[in-house]
Length: 167
Ligand code: RP5
Image (spheres, protein in one colour):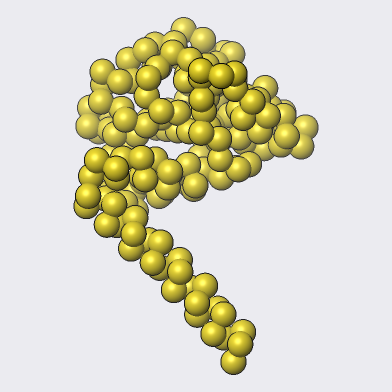
C-alpha cells in the first residue's frame, strides 16, 4: 500500500526520519481503513526545493489530503499549505529540538488568514489519519460507512465502561 505511489490518496510527510515513530500512527489508521497512502521525508528547512516540488505536484499526482508532521520550528505543514490547494493536516511533534511541544504546536497552528492548516493535538498523528479518512469519506460512501462503524465502536466501549463502573 505504502509503495504504490501512483494510486496514493493521502501523502504523509514529515520533517525528519526521527518523526516516524509518531507519524506511523497516521499510517496505521490509513491501513486499517484501506486507504492508499505514500510516506516520505520532506524537510522545509533542509530540503526546501524538495518541499516545493512535493507540494507543487501533489494534486496532479492524485493526492487528496496531505498529513504533514514536524517539530520545533515546524514550518513544513504551513509552507506546504501555502503552495498547494490540497488540504493539509498538521501534526505537531514533540521532537528532540522542541522545548516543550508548544513551539511545534504554535508553529503549525498560528497560520495567517488565507492559508489554513488543520492542526491536531501534540503527537496526535492517529487523529490526523482519522481526519484524512473523514475528508475522503465525504466523496466515498463506503469509507463513510467504515468511519461510522469506527465511531459506533468507540461509543460501545464508553457505554461498556459506564455500565461496569455503575454496576
Ligand atoms: C524538525 O526538526 C523535524 O520535523 C523533527 O521533528 C525535528 C528534529 O529533526 P532531527 O534533528 O531529528 O532530524 O524539522
